[in-house]
Every structure is written in structure tokens, then in C-alpha cells.
Image (tube, rainbow, N blue to C red; front, side, top):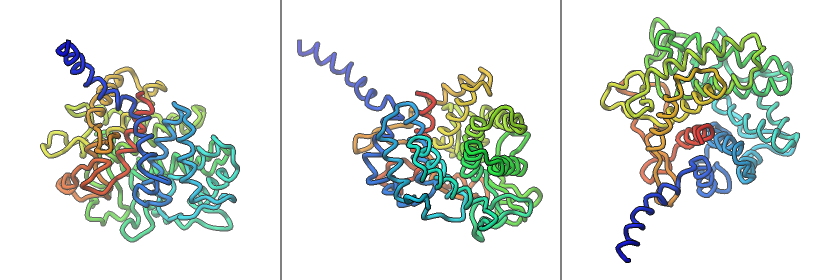
Length: 389
């Protein structure tokens, strides 16, 4: 009898361990709330910045499936620590990374109907675009593209990351409130970035572009960076997928946006690695030290799945997505606190000069006891789980 129970125990035990992290969206959302109190700012003290909002935006997506009011409260607690009762926003900075939290304001306005969140979103919009009374403080390249950040390091530099940080917010705001200037700006900035950084032969986006063609990483001929980083492909794919959902199909630029998304999907499909994911440099999967990078991979899975669900992509992408999700789940583990951990993603970094520099930035896990915690892994797993579970 004891032998029988031992056999049953050995059969059931692995199943129990697996069940502990079966629903990744819920498990990670609950773990994040448990780990970082009173708000997500306890994660890394990043303030009103994408480093906090990309995690909460992922949680917003999980709320859309679960309707767990605890997720709204956690998002609201963070936003309320920066937005006062009159809708004034503190902690603003002149960089596109600081515009992304505007999406949380729109979400809270939709969810709670509190006017202060609409006002806060309007203030974010005005801060970026400017008004007649108060011009924008954001610098632009001579052809009208926003610098990624207003500092000397990013002078006349656009990045593909910036497309995600600002344009989905601007477009959603513009569509929701009938603001054509916001809609036009979001689309103009997206297409300008694509015209500078999207390679029509490889169907992939370069990391950045220098108007003056003087940066150490920039091609002296085109001004583009020389490499395609996994997370910049992830940011770009999510931006296009979300914007396609916001933009009415009757809009004059809808087909153009859809074409760009479909062209990007070709490049992504062609660079899937043997683990069905994407490498740090996604177009150099043959290199031995080019590791599988999960943040870009999770973002890509999210963007492709949206395309399949909305029939922007054909059925040939179904296995790309399903195999990608199965591969992605293998990089989820249990941390020492008994809650889930996402492994093998690139920490935050800027544009690099060459392949060697990109690959010298080694992957991290989150949470981690050996390196600074980084937000991108949480974002990726929540976004992917929101469409795959």
C-alpha cells in the first residue's frame, strides 16, 4: 500500500508543480502586486516613466480578461501618486519614454469614468504636442521627427522604441476624443520612423536613426544603426498592432499602416530561431553567443497573435505563434519567494555600435538576486499571456 501511494505521489507531484504557474497572466500580476508595494514604483523607483507603465499596461491587459478589481486598484494607486484631483501630472520629462504612462490615464478614464484621468491624458497630449499658449518642449529633427530624449546624447536621433512609447497613446487619445491633430501626429511620426529605420529587404527595423549621420553607431550613408535588436522589433510590432486596433479601417492611412505591419511580420517570421523564439540580434541567429531574448519574443508573440485574431495575418502564422508561446513558457521559472520569474531578457540599453557590443550585454532574469531588476520581462510575459491564455 505504501508503495502504491508513493507511485501516485510521484505521478501527481510534477502536475502540482506545473499547475502552480499555469495561468501566467494571473500568476505574474498577483506576484507583482505582492512584491512591490504600495505601488509599482517600489520596483525600481522609476517614477512617471515607461519602466513602470509598461508593466501596468500589461496588467491592464490581464484585467481585460479577468475583471479582477485588484488590478485596477493597483494601477490606480500608482497613477494617483502622480496625478492630482485636478488632473495635473507631476514628474513629466522631455523624453518619449515618459509619454507611455498616458495610456494608463486613458484606461482609468474608461474604467472609472473619473474626469481627472481624461484631464491628465489631455495634459500629457498637450505636453508632447504643445498648444498655442504653451509650445512643446520636445525637440524635433529638421524633418519633424521627435528626438527620443531631449539631451545631447539623442540630438537629432529617432529610435524605433519611441514609436511605441508615444504613438499608440496619441492615436488612442485622438480617436477617443475626436482630436485629428493627435491622430495625424501619431501616424506621421510612425511612418517617418519607418521610412528612416525599416529595411524593406529584410522586413526588419533598425534600432535607431541619426539625422546628421555622425553618431558612432550610425551608417555614414543612411544614418541608421547597423543592427536589429530583438526588443526594438518587439516595441515596433506592438505599436503597429495596437494602432491598427485603434484606427478605424475607413481611415485614409489604415491600409498603409496594415501594410507596414504585414511587412514587419514577414521579417519576424523569417528570423524565428530553433527554440521558436527570437535572439538578441534577431537577424544573426547563427551566432553561438547570440542568446534567446524573451522580452522581444514575448512582445512579438503578442503582436502576431493580435494579427491572427484580427485577420491581418494569414494562417501560416498560427504555428509561428503557437510554437513561440510554447518556447516562451520554458523561460518561466519559480523564484525563491515561490512566485514566478521570467528569465533571459536583455536589460535596458541604448543603441550600440556593432554586433559585439550588442552581444556583450548579457541576459538577466526578473526577479533577480544577482542583478538590478528590469521591467521588460514582466511587460513581455503579461502582454503575451493576455492574448495566449
